[in-house]
Image (cartoon, rainbow, N blue to C red; front, side, top):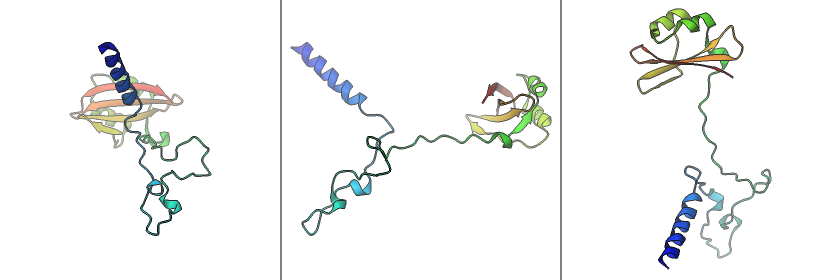
Length: 148
């Protein structure tokens, strides 16, 4: 009897824990909230049922929050490096070396945990980009080459 009770409780806990997604709670729209009617007759805005949007197909939610995606800078706005310059940047290089190669003031695409990350387009290879990260003191941290 105890085993059945334990299994039942465990199943209930798993079912309630799995049915709620974190961060995707939908707050009711103002038209879906019931308000007390003063005249005694219910108004259409006071109904507890959610409003239907004719532009949305049935079965889709209109209040679903969209995940925010950090905008990636357009490839045209990125500084460029050649493949040869990229190969010169290794674990011994400093941020000053990179600035000398690019020849202009560069801005990091992100700054976090004491690291600054820069993104460049490889000018002699199509759709190829380099992400280079330096510590805040200007020493090399990592380099990644990727294609879009």
